Length: 115
Length: 106
Image 1 (cartoon, rainbow over the protein chains, first blue to last red):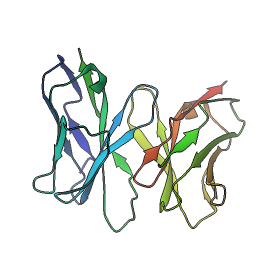
Image 2 (cartoon, rainbow over the protein chains, first blue to last red):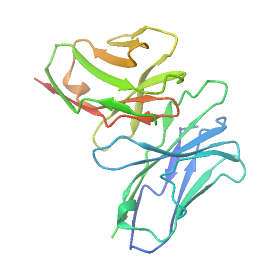
Image 3 (tube, helix red, strand yellow):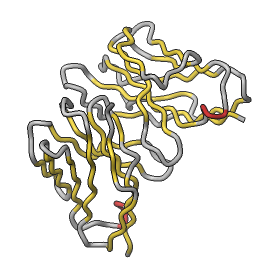
C-alpha cells in the first residue's frame, strides 16, 4: 500500500458545473477525513467517516457538497453547481480508530480551479 | 468554537534554533500535532504529543505543551535550509492554525 491516493490531482471547471473527487485511503484504515485548503490558510475540516458512516460534517459543508463512502473503503466528494469560491485544494486523510484521532497520512490533494 | 492561532512568519539563521508557537482552545483534544508543508508538496506529519504529556523530544524536534495556558511550541534545533516550510499546529480532529512560514537564511 503506497498511502492515501486522490484522483484527479487537478481539476479545472466552469462555474455551475458539478465535480466529483475520489479518495482511496490506506487499506486497513477505517476512518477517512476530507479537508479544504485555500491559499495562505491551514486546512479546514469538512467531514469524516468511520467505515461507511458519515459521523460529522462541518458547517462549511453547504448543501452543494456531498460526501459518500458506500462500502467503507474509498470515498467521493461531490460539489454541485460550483462557485469560484470553491477553488481550493481538497485533501483527504485516513486513520485507524483505536488510536484516538491520530491522523498521520494525508493524500496529495485535488486542486480545484473554478473559472 | 475551536480555534488555533499561530504567528505567521519566522526567520532564523542556519544553525540557530527555531521556536514556533501555537495557542489552542479545545482542551479535550487527545493529540496535538505539528505538520510541515513544503511548496507544492502534501502535508507531512512532523510530530505529535499526547495531551497528558508536557514534552516530547524527537531528534532535532522538541514539543512543549502547557495545558494550563493551552500553549504548544515546536523547537527545531540546528535549523537547516531544508527546514524552510510552513508549519501547522493542529488539535483534535485537526483544527489547523493558519501556519507559520519558517525561512532559514544561510
